[in-house]
Image (cartoon, rainbow, N blue to C red):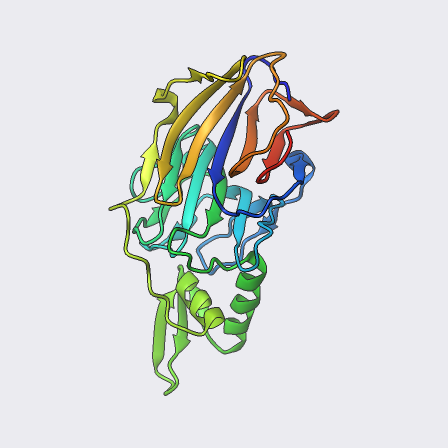
Length: 280
């Protein structure tokens, strides 16, 4: 795999599976259509869902190139899953310090953030995945089906809140995601104890690239490793003519090319998704 001198790829990696997956998936996001995300928030995010299958029953990961519209709003909330966000352009509201272009945030399960009040449009990469607690992350299909089910039951979504009813007919308000999750799972959502007091915001431009000790022409900028699941975030910079040799990997790795271009097996693309124990 080769790239121009200035090229670099944003990388999120996690030990999501011990089951080898011999498949490398390459896709060009320029050829993909946007879809709207229905979640009961104020204004809808548009996204391109990047193909990602863990190969493990019950283990879900959602990886997307997303556009957050002006006026998007969510109340202060938390999740029972982990999330990584990397801003490509614009400024992304988080309620805990905005993420400008080239900045990255790790939003761990159980930690509050928000309210988000988006001013102007921003484009970002979003990776959602099960945290170390192992709580189920609903897939996009599960979310949409349950969202429709709740609407048909007579409730409604307003400003990030689901306004439904208790069995006795009295009102019951819940965060929209919590309401969808509880309806799907059939039990109350109990948040994992937070491992971090709040999300971690990383100013990637202030980190240095370091030469890879084993791979000539490769430089690495490691932003951090988080929780006992050892979720790692960082960048690769691949010099002109440099090659990542074929071999097996111990961990799952997702790569997104933010600048320049690369080649793989005769194919050129802007985006590379790489799975566990693959050849590259």
